[in-house]
Image 1 (cartoon, one colour):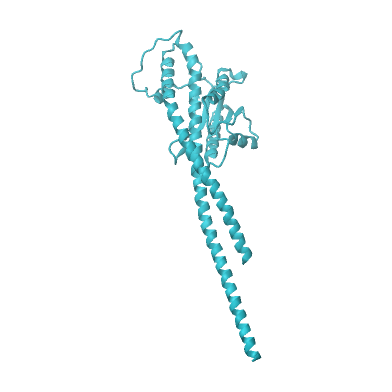
Image 2: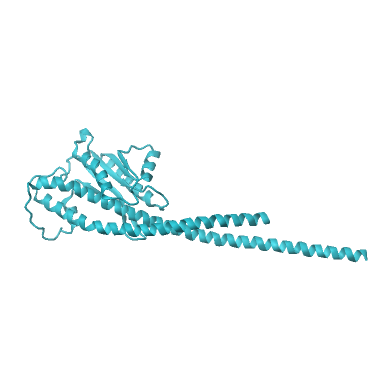
Length: 304
C-alpha cells in the first residue's frame, strides 16, 4: 500500500510541474497574440491603400500586364504554404497543411503541375517525411515576422511567375495561410495572388461599387504597375504572415489552457486516489494494532 501511495505522490509532483509549464506557455502566448494583433491592425491601412493604387494603375493601363492577365492554358502553379516553426498549437499546422493539400489536388485535377513553397519547420517536416519536393523553404521567423521576411519570400515567387513555364516558371501563384478571425476561431484559407483579378482586388480595396479617382501616371501606367505589383505581393504575404502568427499564438494559448485545465483535473483525481490509498493504509495499520492488542490480551488471559 505504501508503494502505491508513493507512485501517486510522484505522479502528482510530475503533473504539477507540467501544469506550471503549460500555464507559463499560455501566458506567453496570450501576450504574443496581442502584439501580433496590433501588427495586423497596423499593416491594414498600408495594404488597403496599396491595393487601391494597384487597382487604379491596372485599370488605367492600356495593355494587359503579364501579371494581371491569365494564361490561356495554364500548366504550372505555385502554392505558398504558411505554417509555424513550433508545435503545441493544436490543429493549427494540420489545418493549414490540409488546406494546401486540398488546393494542390484541385490544381492537379485541372491538369497543372504544382510547385510548393513552404514557410515554417512544421510544414517542411511534413513534406520531407513524405518525400515530397519543396521548391523553396523559409524558417526562423514565424512567431514574429517582419516585412523583410515577406520580401525575401516574395522575390523568388515573383521571379517564377515572370519566367516562361518552359524555363521553370509558373502561370499562377496561390497562398494558403491561417486567417485570424477571433481568439477562439482561426481558419485555414487559400487565395490566388497572381495573376491579379481586378474585380477581387477592387472588392478588397472597397472600390468595387464606388467612384475610382483619376490618376496621371509618369512615366506610364505600365511602368508604375511594374513597380507596384511586387509591393502588392509583398504586402499580401506580409499580412498573411502576421495573420498566421496571430492565429498560431491564439491556438497555442487555447491548447495550453486546455492542457493546464486537464492537468488540474488530473491532479485532483490523483489526490483523491492518494488520499484513498493513505486512508486504506491508516485503516490497515489500525487493524493491525487492534489485532495485535487483542492477541496480546488473549495471551495474558490464558497465562493467568
